[in-house]
Image (cartoon, rainbow, N blue to C red; front, side, top):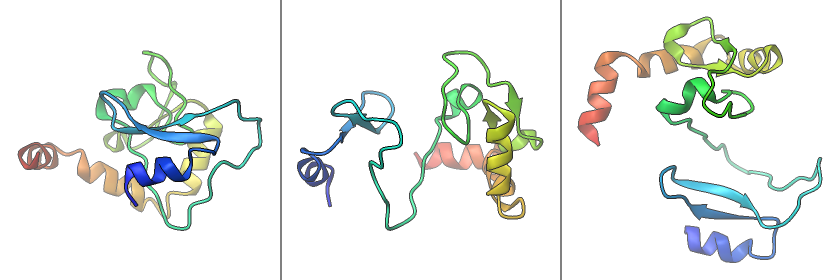
Length: 122
């Protein structure tokens, strides 16, 4: 399914997916959505990526943006590059970290060697 197909399929829905100028694709509400409304159920895993320059300002769990300020709680493994807006979000993320393997993987991606390889591959 292409981005265009998906937008056609959800044109009558609560949201649409649009390309942004600097942050890739994003989901935008098409109309007011009441709290507790289910807007999407995924049948397969998905991924969300916080752009490196916004990691300190964005909660790694709930994605709350701090509008230019650093999030107050940093993950104990500083190399993982994770910040949280609250203790609750930090605990929720840790609970879902599957024996520390996710933070370990994130740490390995943020080494100087890994950054150089990623930069060269772009």
